[in-house]
Image (tube, rainbow, N blue to C red):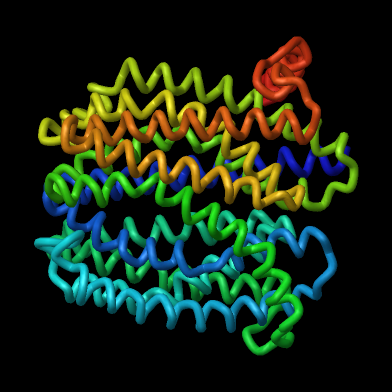
Length: 444
Protein backbone atom coordinates (compact mmCIF):
# COMPACT_ATOMS: atom_id res chain seq x y z
CA UNK A 1 0.00 0.00 0.00
CA UNK A 2 2.89 2.32 0.85
CA UNK A 3 4.45 1.88 -2.57
CA UNK A 4 1.09 2.37 -4.25
CA UNK A 5 0.45 5.58 -2.32
CA UNK A 6 3.91 6.96 -3.07
CA UNK A 7 3.49 6.16 -6.78
CA UNK A 8 0.21 8.06 -6.87
CA UNK A 9 1.66 10.92 -4.82
CA UNK A 10 4.75 11.22 -7.02
CA UNK A 11 2.68 10.96 -10.19
CA UNK A 12 0.30 13.63 -8.94
CA UNK A 13 3.08 16.05 -7.97
CA UNK A 14 4.78 15.48 -11.32
CA UNK A 15 1.48 16.02 -13.12
CA UNK A 16 0.95 19.30 -11.25
CA UNK A 17 4.45 20.36 -12.25
CA UNK A 18 3.81 19.36 -15.87
CA UNK A 19 0.55 21.33 -15.96
CA UNK A 20 2.22 24.38 -14.43
CA UNK A 21 5.21 24.02 -16.74
CA UNK A 22 2.93 23.74 -19.76
CA UNK A 23 1.04 26.88 -18.78
CA UNK A 24 4.29 28.78 -18.27
CA UNK A 25 5.73 27.41 -21.50
CA UNK A 26 2.57 28.30 -23.36
CA UNK A 27 2.64 31.88 -22.10
CA UNK A 28 6.29 32.10 -23.16
CA UNK A 29 5.47 30.70 -26.58
CA UNK A 30 2.56 33.11 -27.05
CA UNK A 31 4.76 36.01 -26.00
CA UNK A 32 7.50 35.06 -28.48
CA UNK A 33 4.98 34.36 -31.26
CA UNK A 34 3.21 37.67 -30.90
CA UNK A 35 6.26 39.88 -30.36
CA UNK A 36 8.60 38.23 -32.86
CA UNK A 37 6.07 37.09 -35.48
CA UNK A 38 6.12 33.79 -37.36
CA UNK A 39 9.51 34.44 -38.95
CA UNK A 40 11.16 35.46 -35.68
CA UNK A 41 9.64 32.58 -33.77
CA UNK A 42 10.75 30.13 -36.44
CA UNK A 43 14.31 31.45 -36.22
CA UNK A 44 14.26 31.20 -32.41
CA UNK A 45 13.02 27.60 -32.64
CA UNK A 46 15.88 26.71 -35.00
CA UNK A 47 18.49 28.48 -32.86
CA UNK A 48 17.53 26.59 -29.70
CA UNK A 49 17.06 23.39 -31.71
CA UNK A 50 20.79 23.20 -32.45
CA UNK A 51 21.90 22.96 -28.82
CA UNK A 52 19.01 20.65 -28.01
CA UNK A 53 19.93 18.37 -30.90
CA UNK A 54 23.58 18.23 -29.84
CA UNK A 55 22.62 17.45 -26.25
CA UNK A 56 20.25 14.73 -27.43
CA UNK A 57 22.87 13.17 -29.69
CA UNK A 58 25.78 13.23 -27.24
CA UNK A 59 24.33 12.56 -23.76
CA UNK A 60 24.90 8.79 -24.35
CA UNK A 61 22.05 7.81 -22.04
CA UNK A 62 23.99 8.71 -18.88
CA UNK A 63 20.91 10.27 -17.29
CA UNK A 64 18.68 7.29 -18.00
CA UNK A 65 21.36 4.95 -16.66
CA UNK A 66 21.52 6.97 -13.44
CA UNK A 67 17.84 6.49 -12.69
CA UNK A 68 18.04 2.79 -13.60
CA UNK A 69 21.12 1.95 -11.50
CA UNK A 70 19.93 3.98 -8.52
CA UNK A 71 16.72 1.94 -8.64
CA UNK A 72 18.79 -1.24 -8.72
CA UNK A 73 20.72 -0.09 -5.63
CA UNK A 74 24.05 -1.57 -6.75
CA UNK A 75 26.18 1.60 -6.98
CA UNK A 76 26.91 4.30 -4.38
CA UNK A 77 24.89 7.43 -4.95
CA UNK A 78 27.95 9.66 -4.45
CA UNK A 79 29.84 7.72 -7.14
CA UNK A 80 26.98 8.13 -9.59
CA UNK A 81 26.78 11.86 -8.86
CA UNK A 82 30.52 12.41 -9.28
CA UNK A 83 30.70 10.31 -12.43
CA UNK A 84 27.74 12.18 -13.90
CA UNK A 85 29.35 15.59 -13.32
CA UNK A 86 32.63 14.62 -14.94
CA UNK A 87 30.81 12.94 -17.83
CA UNK A 88 28.74 16.10 -18.36
CA UNK A 89 31.83 18.26 -18.78
CA UNK A 90 33.48 15.85 -21.22
CA UNK A 91 30.36 15.26 -23.31
CA UNK A 92 29.55 18.97 -23.26
CA UNK A 93 32.99 19.79 -24.68
CA UNK A 94 32.68 17.14 -27.41
CA UNK A 95 29.24 18.36 -28.47
CA UNK A 96 30.54 21.96 -28.51
CA UNK A 97 33.20 21.15 -31.10
CA UNK A 98 30.75 19.13 -33.18
CA UNK A 99 28.45 22.14 -33.08
CA UNK A 100 31.21 24.30 -34.49
CA UNK A 101 31.51 21.95 -37.45
CA UNK A 102 27.75 22.09 -38.04
CA UNK A 103 27.69 25.89 -37.91
CA UNK A 104 30.64 26.49 -40.24
CA UNK A 105 29.90 23.76 -42.80
CA UNK A 106 26.10 23.28 -42.81
CA UNK A 107 24.83 26.74 -41.90
CA UNK A 108 23.24 27.55 -45.24
CA UNK A 109 21.54 24.15 -45.59
CA UNK A 110 19.54 24.20 -42.34
CA UNK A 111 20.04 27.62 -40.70
CA UNK A 112 19.80 29.98 -43.63
CA UNK A 113 18.92 33.53 -42.58
CA UNK A 114 20.06 32.96 -38.99
CA UNK A 115 23.14 34.76 -37.69
CA UNK A 116 26.01 32.46 -36.80
CA UNK A 117 26.59 34.48 -33.62
CA UNK A 118 23.26 33.22 -32.21
CA UNK A 119 24.16 29.62 -32.92
CA UNK A 120 27.65 30.02 -31.44
CA UNK A 121 26.17 31.59 -28.32
CA UNK A 122 23.88 28.62 -27.67
CA UNK A 123 26.85 26.25 -27.94
CA UNK A 124 28.41 27.83 -24.83
CA UNK A 125 25.55 26.55 -22.69
CA UNK A 126 25.98 22.90 -23.70
CA UNK A 127 28.01 21.71 -20.64
CA UNK A 128 25.35 23.20 -18.36
CA UNK A 129 22.57 21.46 -20.32
CA UNK A 130 24.34 18.14 -19.70
CA UNK A 131 24.91 18.79 -15.99
CA UNK A 132 21.31 19.92 -15.46
CA UNK A 133 19.90 16.72 -16.92
CA UNK A 134 22.41 14.39 -15.25
CA UNK A 135 21.73 15.92 -11.82
CA UNK A 136 17.96 15.93 -12.32
CA UNK A 137 17.87 12.21 -13.13
CA UNK A 138 19.62 11.48 -9.83
CA UNK A 139 16.55 12.93 -8.08
CA UNK A 140 14.35 10.81 -10.35
CA UNK A 141 16.31 7.68 -9.41
CA UNK A 142 15.93 8.23 -5.65
CA UNK A 143 12.26 9.15 -6.29
CA UNK A 144 12.68 12.63 -4.82
CA UNK A 145 10.14 14.11 -7.18
CA UNK A 146 9.79 17.30 -5.16
CA UNK A 147 13.31 18.34 -6.12
CA UNK A 148 12.94 16.83 -9.59
CA UNK A 149 9.84 18.89 -10.26
CA UNK A 150 11.24 22.09 -8.75
CA UNK A 151 14.21 21.91 -11.11
CA UNK A 152 12.02 21.32 -14.17
CA UNK A 153 9.60 24.09 -13.24
CA UNK A 154 12.32 26.61 -12.40
CA UNK A 155 13.78 26.37 -15.89
CA UNK A 156 10.49 27.31 -17.56
CA UNK A 157 9.67 30.03 -15.05
CA UNK A 158 13.08 31.70 -15.41
CA UNK A 159 12.82 31.72 -19.20
CA UNK A 160 9.37 33.32 -18.99
CA UNK A 161 10.33 36.05 -16.53
CA UNK A 162 13.53 36.97 -18.39
CA UNK A 163 11.61 36.90 -21.71
CA UNK A 164 9.09 39.38 -20.33
CA UNK A 165 11.91 41.63 -19.16
CA UNK A 166 14.00 41.51 -22.32
CA UNK A 167 11.34 41.18 -25.02
CA UNK A 168 8.35 43.11 -23.65
CA UNK A 169 9.97 45.71 -21.40
CA UNK A 170 13.26 46.39 -23.23
CA UNK A 171 12.16 45.32 -26.73
CA UNK A 172 15.32 43.30 -27.45
CA UNK A 173 13.46 41.03 -29.89
CA UNK A 174 15.12 37.76 -30.79
CA UNK A 175 18.21 38.77 -28.78
CA UNK A 176 16.06 38.82 -25.66
CA UNK A 177 14.51 35.43 -26.45
CA UNK A 178 17.92 33.77 -26.91
CA UNK A 179 19.39 35.29 -23.73
CA UNK A 180 16.30 34.24 -21.76
CA UNK A 181 16.86 30.65 -22.89
CA UNK A 182 20.52 30.77 -21.86
CA UNK A 183 19.82 32.42 -18.51
CA UNK A 184 17.20 29.78 -17.72
CA UNK A 185 19.78 27.00 -18.01
CA UNK A 186 22.30 28.80 -15.76
CA UNK A 187 19.79 29.44 -12.96
CA UNK A 188 18.56 25.85 -13.19
CA UNK A 189 22.11 24.54 -12.75
CA UNK A 190 22.77 26.68 -9.68
CA UNK A 191 19.58 25.50 -7.98
CA UNK A 192 20.20 21.86 -8.99
CA UNK A 193 23.61 21.86 -7.30
CA UNK A 194 22.10 23.49 -4.21
CA UNK A 195 19.29 20.92 -3.92
CA UNK A 196 21.70 18.01 -4.43
CA UNK A 197 23.73 19.28 -1.48
CA UNK A 198 20.77 20.13 0.74
CA UNK A 199 18.50 17.13 0.15
CA UNK A 200 20.95 14.36 -0.79
CA UNK A 201 24.14 15.60 0.89
CA UNK A 202 25.94 15.45 -2.45
CA UNK A 203 28.58 18.08 -3.12
CA UNK A 204 30.43 18.67 -6.37
CA UNK A 205 33.67 17.44 -4.79
CA UNK A 206 32.07 14.48 -3.00
CA UNK A 207 32.40 10.87 -4.10
CA UNK A 208 34.77 9.47 -6.67
CA UNK A 209 34.67 8.77 -10.37
CA UNK A 210 33.68 5.13 -10.89
CA UNK A 211 35.05 3.68 -14.10
CA UNK A 212 33.14 0.41 -13.60
CA UNK A 213 29.85 2.29 -13.17
CA UNK A 214 30.66 4.51 -16.16
CA UNK A 215 31.29 1.44 -18.31
CA UNK A 216 28.12 -0.32 -17.11
CA UNK A 217 26.06 2.83 -17.51
CA UNK A 218 27.22 3.21 -21.09
CA UNK A 219 26.35 -0.42 -21.84
CA UNK A 220 22.80 0.24 -20.67
CA UNK A 221 22.71 3.92 -21.58
CA UNK A 222 23.83 3.65 -25.21
CA UNK A 223 20.77 1.54 -25.98
CA UNK A 224 18.49 4.01 -24.27
CA UNK A 225 20.42 6.87 -25.84
CA UNK A 226 19.99 5.63 -29.39
CA UNK A 227 16.31 5.12 -28.71
CA UNK A 228 15.97 8.65 -27.28
CA UNK A 229 17.89 10.14 -30.20
CA UNK A 230 15.62 8.41 -32.66
CA UNK A 231 12.54 9.43 -30.66
CA UNK A 232 13.70 13.04 -30.58
CA UNK A 233 14.29 12.96 -34.33
CA UNK A 234 10.82 11.53 -34.69
CA UNK A 235 9.50 14.62 -32.92
CA UNK A 236 11.73 17.24 -34.56
CA UNK A 237 13.01 16.05 -37.95
CA UNK A 238 9.94 17.62 -39.55
CA UNK A 239 11.11 21.09 -38.48
CA UNK A 240 14.43 20.71 -40.26
CA UNK A 241 12.78 19.39 -43.42
CA UNK A 242 10.20 22.20 -43.36
CA UNK A 243 13.04 24.72 -42.98
CA UNK A 244 14.86 23.15 -45.92
CA UNK A 245 11.87 22.99 -48.30
CA UNK A 246 9.84 26.02 -47.17
CA UNK A 247 11.05 28.76 -44.75
CA UNK A 248 11.50 29.68 -41.04
CA UNK A 249 7.99 31.19 -40.89
CA UNK A 250 6.50 27.79 -41.75
CA UNK A 251 8.65 26.27 -39.00
CA UNK A 252 7.15 28.74 -36.53
CA UNK A 253 3.57 27.90 -37.56
CA UNK A 254 4.23 24.16 -37.46
CA UNK A 255 6.06 24.44 -34.14
CA UNK A 256 2.98 25.99 -32.54
CA UNK A 257 0.74 23.18 -33.84
CA UNK A 258 3.14 20.54 -32.51
CA UNK A 259 3.45 22.31 -29.18
CA UNK A 260 -0.31 22.35 -28.65
CA UNK A 261 -0.79 18.74 -29.76
CA UNK A 262 1.97 17.49 -27.45
CA UNK A 263 0.13 18.93 -24.44
CA UNK A 264 -1.90 15.72 -24.56
CA UNK A 265 1.27 13.93 -23.42
CA UNK A 266 1.14 15.68 -20.08
CA UNK A 267 -0.35 12.67 -18.30
CA UNK A 268 1.77 10.01 -19.97
CA UNK A 269 4.93 12.05 -19.43
CA UNK A 270 4.21 12.69 -15.76
CA UNK A 271 3.43 9.06 -15.00
CA UNK A 272 6.27 7.69 -17.15
CA UNK A 273 8.82 9.66 -15.16
CA UNK A 274 7.62 7.96 -11.98
CA UNK A 275 6.97 4.59 -13.62
CA UNK A 276 10.53 4.06 -14.87
CA UNK A 277 12.38 3.97 -11.51
CA UNK A 278 9.46 2.12 -9.90
CA UNK A 279 9.52 -0.68 -12.51
CA UNK A 280 13.31 -0.84 -12.09
CA UNK A 281 12.94 -1.41 -8.34
CA UNK A 282 10.20 -4.07 -8.56
CA UNK A 283 11.41 -7.67 -8.39
CA UNK A 284 8.20 -9.50 -9.33
CA UNK A 285 6.85 -9.55 -12.87
CA UNK A 286 3.27 -9.61 -11.58
CA UNK A 287 3.76 -6.26 -9.87
CA UNK A 288 5.22 -4.71 -13.00
CA UNK A 289 2.50 -6.06 -15.27
CA UNK A 290 -0.32 -4.93 -13.01
CA UNK A 291 1.02 -1.39 -12.55
CA UNK A 292 1.78 -0.77 -16.23
CA UNK A 293 -1.56 -2.21 -17.36
CA UNK A 294 -3.55 0.09 -15.07
CA UNK A 295 -1.55 3.13 -16.11
CA UNK A 296 -1.55 2.35 -19.85
CA UNK A 297 -5.27 1.82 -20.36
CA UNK A 298 -6.31 4.82 -18.27
CA UNK A 299 -3.81 7.14 -19.93
CA UNK A 300 -5.07 6.04 -23.35
CA UNK A 301 -8.70 6.74 -22.42
CA UNK A 302 -7.84 10.16 -21.04
CA UNK A 303 -5.74 11.00 -24.11
CA UNK A 304 -8.61 10.10 -26.45
CA UNK A 305 -10.96 12.38 -24.54
CA UNK A 306 -8.54 15.33 -24.55
CA UNK A 307 -7.67 14.70 -28.21
CA UNK A 308 -11.33 14.98 -29.25
CA UNK A 309 -11.66 18.27 -27.36
CA UNK A 310 -8.52 19.64 -29.01
CA UNK A 311 -9.77 18.58 -32.45
CA UNK A 312 -13.11 20.36 -32.02
CA UNK A 313 -11.49 23.53 -30.67
CA UNK A 314 -8.35 23.61 -32.82
CA UNK A 315 -9.30 26.72 -34.85
CA UNK A 316 -10.36 28.58 -31.73
CA UNK A 317 -7.19 27.62 -29.83
CA UNK A 318 -4.85 28.74 -32.62
CA UNK A 319 -6.65 32.08 -33.10
CA UNK A 320 -6.92 32.77 -29.38
CA UNK A 321 -3.32 31.99 -28.52
CA UNK A 322 -1.35 33.06 -31.57
CA UNK A 323 -3.57 35.12 -33.88
CA UNK A 324 -4.58 34.98 -37.57
CA UNK A 325 -0.99 34.77 -38.78
CA UNK A 326 -0.86 31.20 -37.45
CA UNK A 327 -4.32 29.91 -38.42
CA UNK A 328 -2.89 27.68 -41.16
CA UNK A 329 -1.48 25.55 -38.35
CA UNK A 330 -4.99 24.44 -37.36
CA UNK A 331 -5.19 21.65 -39.93
CA UNK A 332 -1.65 20.56 -39.06
CA UNK A 333 -2.78 20.29 -35.44
CA UNK A 334 -5.81 18.16 -36.38
CA UNK A 335 -3.69 15.78 -38.45
CA UNK A 336 -1.21 15.37 -35.59
CA UNK A 337 -3.77 14.46 -32.93
CA UNK A 338 -4.39 10.75 -33.76
CA UNK A 339 -0.68 10.00 -33.64
CA UNK A 340 -0.20 11.99 -30.43
CA UNK A 341 -3.02 10.04 -28.76
CA UNK A 342 -1.46 6.70 -29.66
CA UNK A 343 1.93 8.04 -28.59
CA UNK A 344 0.65 8.46 -25.03
CA UNK A 345 0.38 4.70 -24.60
CA UNK A 346 3.66 4.13 -26.44
CA UNK A 347 5.48 6.31 -23.89
CA UNK A 348 4.11 4.24 -21.00
CA UNK A 349 5.09 0.94 -22.60
CA UNK A 350 8.55 2.25 -23.56
CA UNK A 351 9.33 3.27 -19.98
CA UNK A 352 8.08 -0.07 -18.70
CA UNK A 353 10.41 -1.93 -21.07
CA UNK A 354 13.34 0.28 -20.06
CA UNK A 355 12.60 -0.34 -16.40
CA UNK A 356 12.73 -4.09 -17.05
CA UNK A 357 16.20 -3.67 -18.57
CA UNK A 358 14.91 -4.36 -22.10
CA UNK A 359 15.89 -0.96 -23.40
CA UNK A 360 17.23 -2.43 -26.65
CA UNK A 361 13.64 -3.05 -27.79
CA UNK A 362 12.98 0.68 -27.77
CA UNK A 363 16.22 1.20 -29.68
CA UNK A 364 15.39 -1.24 -32.46
CA UNK A 365 11.84 -0.01 -32.96
CA UNK A 366 13.00 3.60 -32.99
CA UNK A 367 15.27 2.92 -35.97
CA UNK A 368 12.26 1.67 -37.93
CA UNK A 369 9.98 4.55 -37.02
CA UNK A 370 12.54 7.31 -37.60
CA UNK A 371 13.47 5.94 -41.02
CA UNK A 372 9.78 5.83 -41.89
CA UNK A 373 9.24 9.37 -40.60
CA UNK A 374 12.11 10.83 -42.61
CA UNK A 375 10.99 9.13 -45.82
CA UNK A 376 7.38 10.24 -45.34
CA UNK A 377 8.42 13.83 -44.57
CA UNK A 378 10.64 14.01 -47.64
CA UNK A 379 7.72 12.82 -49.75
CA UNK A 380 4.89 14.77 -48.13
CA UNK A 381 6.37 18.14 -47.07
CA UNK A 382 7.21 19.29 -50.65
CA UNK A 383 3.67 18.35 -51.72
CA UNK A 384 1.52 19.18 -48.70
CA UNK A 385 3.63 21.61 -46.68
CA UNK A 386 3.26 21.53 -42.90
CA UNK A 387 0.14 19.36 -43.22
CA UNK A 388 2.32 16.72 -44.87
CA UNK A 389 4.70 16.88 -41.90
CA UNK A 390 1.79 16.31 -39.51
CA UNK A 391 0.45 13.41 -41.51
CA UNK A 392 3.91 11.82 -41.67
CA UNK A 393 4.27 12.13 -37.89
CA UNK A 394 0.87 10.59 -37.21
CA UNK A 395 1.59 7.59 -39.44
CA UNK A 396 4.94 7.14 -37.70
CA UNK A 397 3.46 7.36 -34.19
CA UNK A 398 0.82 4.84 -35.23
CA UNK A 399 3.47 2.41 -36.45
CA UNK A 400 5.41 2.81 -33.21
CA UNK A 401 2.25 2.17 -31.20
CA UNK A 402 1.38 -1.09 -32.94
CA UNK A 403 4.93 -2.42 -32.72
CA UNK A 404 5.24 -1.66 -28.99
CA UNK A 405 1.80 -3.03 -28.16
CA UNK A 406 2.53 -6.35 -29.89
CA UNK A 407 5.96 -6.66 -28.25
CA UNK A 408 4.63 -5.79 -24.80
CA UNK A 409 1.97 -8.47 -25.11
CA UNK A 410 4.52 -11.09 -26.18
CA UNK A 411 6.97 -10.21 -23.40
CA UNK A 412 4.50 -9.99 -20.52
CA UNK A 413 1.70 -12.29 -21.65
CA UNK A 414 -0.82 -9.62 -20.62
CA UNK A 415 -3.90 -9.69 -22.92
CA UNK A 416 -4.35 -6.65 -25.15
CA UNK A 417 -7.58 -5.55 -23.51
CA UNK A 418 -5.93 -5.56 -20.08
CA UNK A 419 -3.55 -2.71 -20.94
CA UNK A 420 -5.53 -0.94 -23.68
CA UNK A 421 -9.18 -0.93 -22.58
CA UNK A 422 -10.62 0.22 -19.28
CA UNK A 423 -12.85 -2.25 -17.47
CA UNK A 424 -15.11 -2.63 -14.48
CA UNK A 425 -12.26 -2.35 -11.97
CA UNK A 426 -11.31 1.03 -13.42
CA UNK A 427 -14.84 2.38 -13.07
CA UNK A 428 -14.89 1.11 -9.50
CA UNK A 429 -11.62 2.98 -8.92
CA UNK A 430 -13.18 6.14 -10.38
CA UNK A 431 -16.10 5.71 -8.04
CA UNK A 432 -13.84 5.41 -5.00
CA UNK A 433 -11.87 8.49 -6.03
CA UNK A 434 -15.04 10.54 -6.56
CA UNK A 435 -16.33 9.36 -3.18
CA UNK A 436 -13.12 10.40 -1.42
CA UNK A 437 -13.14 13.79 -3.12
CA UNK A 438 -16.80 14.40 -2.25
CA UNK A 439 -16.10 13.58 1.41
CA UNK A 440 -13.24 16.06 1.52
CA UNK A 441 -15.32 18.73 -0.20
CA UNK A 442 -18.13 18.28 2.34
CA UNK A 443 -15.63 18.59 5.20
CA UNK A 444 -14.36 21.85 3.76
